[in-house]
Length: 305
Figure 1 (cartoon, rainbow, N blue to C red):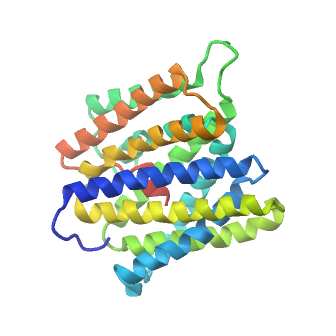
Figure 2: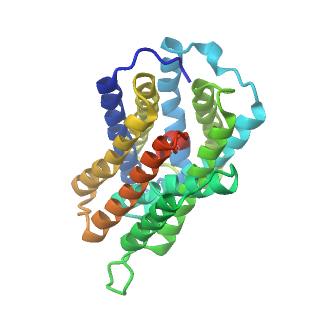
Figure 3: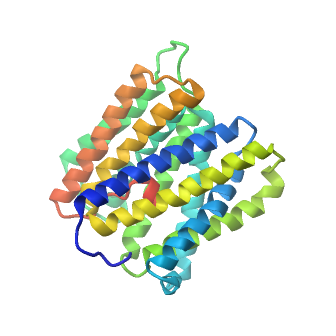
């Protein structure tokens, strides 16, 4: 990661809020494109292809191109494979679910990270965090709206969103084990590069022609995704993760507002209640991690991108 300068907490928070806004914009634009038949592999390609220039501009004026060197190529390949699989599932969940539901379920990633940290990193998970994990999964069940009311969300979409969150958590654990041996610039740049290559490889099998307007939407989504990554990373130069990460939950608010404006998808009581349970679980887990002086869980967007 870039060297930390003097702390500027308000600026760090402002950048993180901007990142949450750009993430919501990216997600809503991709869902808008899906109405014209754009599928997840195409989203992967265009998000990476048009986000890459934004990342390169940041590298040029920030850490410099020397920071792009891969010290351990196998780490980048493994991390990128996990991230690409996760982001494909994330995009597919955006296609299948109401936008607010898809984004909210994505915030179960810190819950999965807690479970994986206990299994893989052998970190102790006390009763407080176990209850937080249980609370988060109750939130998912609430969002699913079981009970045969006729308004349940597609179970397949929920499962894909959960797989995406699990993949994001796996990326989180990978980033923890990497430590300071790879720079943030190299991790982000090579992830975008590998995503572009995988997207190009999948395009002959999943791609199709679209209207010029749809391509314009995809370009804007890619620019928003790259800017999101930039503002999210820059926020960490000015404030600690434990301070700025709670503001990632503004993504849910942004997705709810844009889902209502663009798709007339009004948030349901179940979505609001599930978001409160999942958000409360994630925030409490981050607070406990901070108190116990552990590395806080990497938020979904940061881990995936």
